Length: 111
Image 1 (cartoon, rainbow, N blue to C red):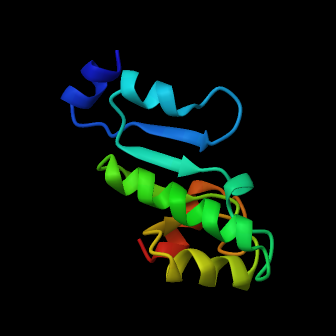
Image 2: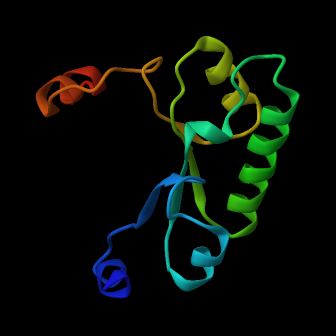
């Protein structure tokens, strides 16, 4: 089914990558375009060296597979700075915006 969806132009994303049922071995089985990297794989604070290493390695994996990365759970200026400096092209989280109805999103984007 994923192949059919991609054939009509849709891009497929794996949400919450790094937790639950998402695993590295599944990436070989699925044709996906985007990995939304779960916030559990981002550093908790500026001194979290293991978190920094894990997030950087995850981005390297995503890029190595030719996929697009989205950093999920960006909830502070420090986290936003980290994902920007490490090259994550996209991010989502409460620091950037709270969930909102479609008309508010359109207004925010000037559409």
